[in-house]
Length: 73
Image 1 (cartoon, rainbow, N blue to C red):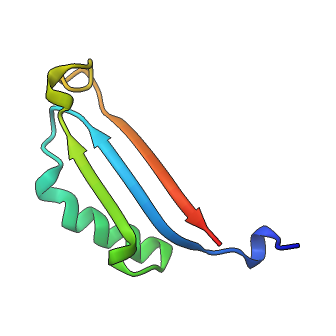
Image 2: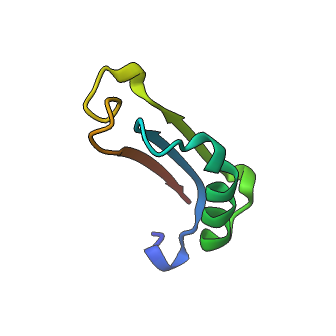
């Protein structure tokens, strides 16, 4: 049986929905910082950003919504 102490993060996927601030230009810096914090390669951090075409409150500028998925082995 594997315990948490023996596990490690191998991949992180992040999806951000907001109108402001503009996230896309900041993705390389965010990816780099997350990779350094988690001690994983940058290509193991996936980040997407969308405005949701204004269909939700987040896409209309009334907040920021973030979903993330972390793969641990």
